[in-house]
Structure formats: C-alpha cells, structure tokens
Image 1 (spheres, helix red, strand yellow):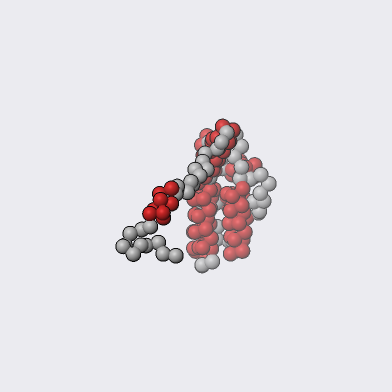
Image 2 (image 1 turned 120 degrees about the horizontal axis):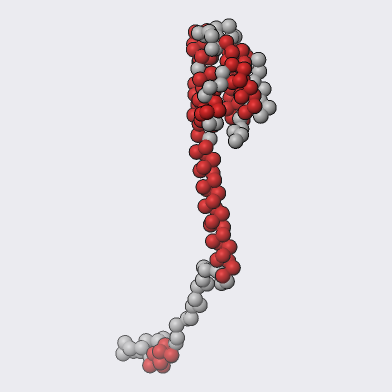
Amino acid sequence: MTTARAGGGVDPAIEAALAKLADVMVPQPPSLLPQTWGWLVLAVVALVLAGWQIVRVRRRRAANRYRVEALAQLARLEAQLGADARSRAAALREVPPLLKRVALAAWPRERVASLSGPEWLAFLRSGGAGIDLGSVLPRLLDDGEYRAAPASLSAAEASDLLRAVRAWIEDHRVSA
C-alpha cells in the first residue's frame, strides 16, 4: 500500500488519521517519599541512632588511643628482644615506664603517680581483672627500681614478660 501520491504529497486520509492520534500517556513515576508520616518518623529515628552510634565509636576510639600507642611501643620493644643481651636489657628497661604511662593515661594522676613497689604491683593486679602477671614482671618492677638493667632475664623470660605486659595493656579495666 502506498501512502505517497503521484504528485509527491501525502494522502489526505492518512493526514487526517495522523492528526487524530494522541500521544501515549505515560503514568507519573512513583514517589520516592514515604506515603505515610510513620515511615518518615522511622527514618529520622534511624538517622539519630546511627549518629549516636558513630559518636560512641569515636569516643571509644579516642578513649583507647593510649592503648594503641602503648601496644605500638611494646611491639618495638619486642623487636629488640631477639638481638643480643645488651639490646634485650635496654628494651626491658623501657617496660616499667611504659606501664606507668599507660596507667597515668587511664587513671587519675593522684591515684597512680606515687605508686611503687608492692603498691604498684597490687595496683597492676587490681586493674588487670584476673590477668596473670607471671613471676617475671613483679621481679622486674621490684628490682628495676634498684638495678640499672635486668640482665639476668633470658630471651624466653623476656618474651613471657612482654606477653604479660601486652595482656595487661589490652585488657585492663579502669574503675572509677
């Protein structure tokens, strides 16, 4: 069937039919907003709870930043253990000040700064909540006040000592 006429024009019947055609009606896209106010309230509550959780996580991270720094220092000390006895002694001399800095960061200065000897060990045990300090750490803390270097510790004892210190740094609990 030919729509063009011999003279080059379009058949008038087809033109009339095309003029009567209407565009296809496309429905409105569905709204992305909730249809009831209850969903809006739920969304607001969810956003508030998410914001509160973010604030809690950030506060917890800030409060435990001293632990991260102490564990990094302890890792550096552990790297010095495998070398000769002199570097092991130098690394072990750093353990008591590290423990004191951790305690000062976690507890009030008035409670921790003056502790030494048996009181310091009792404090470490009480803050450790069941952490086994072993036999090497108390000996190091007791003797460390009077000796220049704990040269009598073997590499295995030094490793056990740093394992106990790591456990205390990771797991101590601050009581009010």
